[in-house]
Length: 273
Length: 318
Ligand SMILES: Nc1ncnc2c1ncn2[C@@H]1O[C@H](COP(=O)(O)OP(=O)(O)O)[C@@H](O)[C@H]1O
Ligand SMILES: [Mg+2]
Image 1 (cartoon, rainbow over the protein chains, first blue to last red):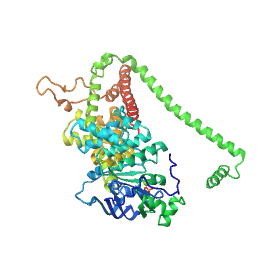
Image 2: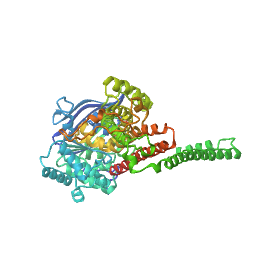
Image 3: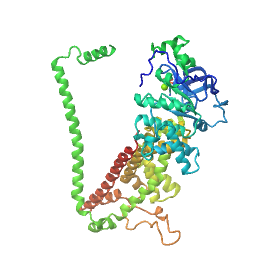
Image 4: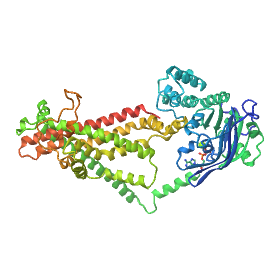
């Protein structure tokens, strides 16, 4: 299942849609990140298309996660991190003083590398977000949000009979889908995923990938992966990072068939990474 | 390749050139000797403790009876009991907990989650750790000046509670901070990631996960307070007391009274100390019995801490 695509073989991205002509959801201009004195990201400028999957690939430590976390200002929670540059979502600067970071993170959800459900029931895991944002006016409404989110995360059938059991009791793949449901529940526009399948077995990985392909109908998705077959399978656009710089960005199809930069070529043919 | 080269290095290190069979045998012997010494010192502690317990039980057990718990101290050893002492202990610990626990937990949360890291918080941090090592008599001297003479709270249950609250504050602060620090960062990230505020992250996720450790710290602090004698003698606890504090519940409106806070008091360890300092083995038996009660209380508090920690930990898994 994991071997649908050979590493170096030319690939056609999921569907034939390459997200060309889609409106732009997120505009990044000259984004730099420092951790203390250490510069982790150099002048990254990239447009993220609306309702499509954009994949970030590159060797580990090249700044993929760092950049991903800029887009929901998650780096704010790290005291040593400093971010410069402009990031606009639907034309609105996310560093604008009038913008509430809590509101931003409800609009730009995040799924992490290691599944991290709360030590609460499955129901509470999904209901927590809507509750703190006041999205449901009644228990019935909250129930409906939980059900719909779990359905969208393809977990409802497995979870509907055990909603009151702890989320930590699920399998790794189910936990990750629970985390996706938790992100969906606050009705975001963008979902950032940081290597969401790297801790999962091939079957669970395939389910997550199918899910991502479905979710792009409704959400703008940015996924970090160090697995190039995965990038090829799920994304319409791909960006290659190297040593804190954005080296190349193109439709996934072109990226894997005709990379322009030597470094991209070397990386996707497995010469380093 | 690099790995095997490294291993070869390690091997040649352990079999250093010039170390003959005799020296290796000597090294093994030293190791065995060390283990034997460690075992012996452990046994010394264990034997001393069981001897102490046995001695205490032999003297005190015969005196333990219902009357012993319901009688005031008396000039006749056989009629004397610990009523005023255990009531005093319970009330003092109650006040200690009501004042010390919220203050300690709040300070711990503030220092760990909110305070900026700068020279001020560094100084506070060092001070908190040092406070835990200050001899308890010093707290007594401080309380005598601050509460008894300064605030005029008298030689009362309130003063005792305040003093012991100060004494256990560093214990609770340190325990709170350590349990908060042990909460995995991924839990906070998850909550921040769906737009929780810092307050919500702390209240809904960090604190519930830290609760087992915080509770353990609280109980260990309180059981330490339960056995304290020196600071309470300093602030003027009574040694012979044949009345109970004012009852907290009254028959008239508003049915609740706080006058007991300002009453004189004694506590179990002071009562025991008072009896042991009298001549005559009758009173010494009383002291042993009071010691047994105190020991049982402290041990059950510690057992409660272990059970709570175990059960709450099992409920929280990541
Ligand atoms: N919290 C942090 N503090 C300091 N340096 C960090 C931190 N997070 C990441 N870095 C550094 O920033 C660089 C980029 O890291 P990261 O974005 O995690 O890379 P990737 O996700 O591509 O593997 C690395 O050199 C890493 O060591
Ligand atoms: Mg990463």
